[in-house]
Image 1 (cartoon, one colour):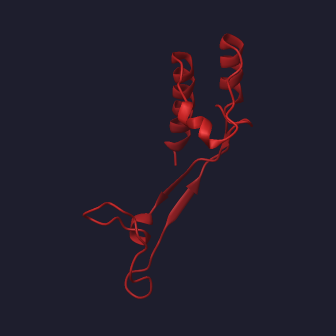
Image 2 (spheres, rainbow, N blue to C red):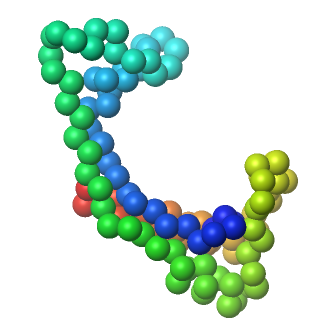
Length: 104
């Protein structure tokens, strides 16, 4: 919501990455499978959804609360304090993403 350009998102879901990039059982770090060739074939299935646009949510927010501030560089993120109305906007964005991920 605070990006200098309006966000657009292509949702995707994948199954099978755990075979290609398994997690270490003790430390949880991800690493490339040690034996890529031979053995069971590696299969990763990826599904993509339709583009999600949030313009309506951002425009509604800005009509009620004024313009959202836009970050210009990463160091600004450390000063980030969200208002309750911004948190509600983030929730609406998250719910929209979840809605589009469910069918995948």
